[in-house]
Image (cartoon, one colour):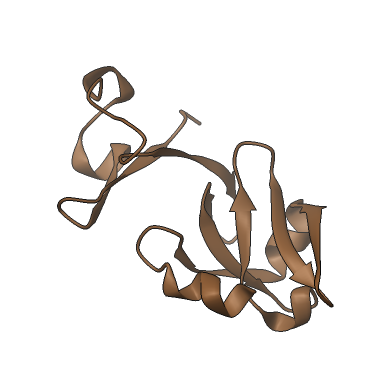
Length: 114
């Protein structure tokens, strides 16, 4: 599978995807911190895609509160009983989770996660 990416454009309030919107990393030399690039980190057997900066809910983790996928290392971060944690995001964990948004389009979900 060819790597897939997306980029958030704050000015347009829109997420652009390499496979859907026809851009490539070679054509995005104007990207900066305010236009982050996120890579697809996992695709489940059910076909669900998990990108960096996605916010997920897991049935058995973090008391059902949203969890953010950490960049490039297939891990997530959350908070349990007031203590932050990092946990590997493997196929078993993916199967029990659902993407509910991302930190760019849905920043309000981060407030729920804390």
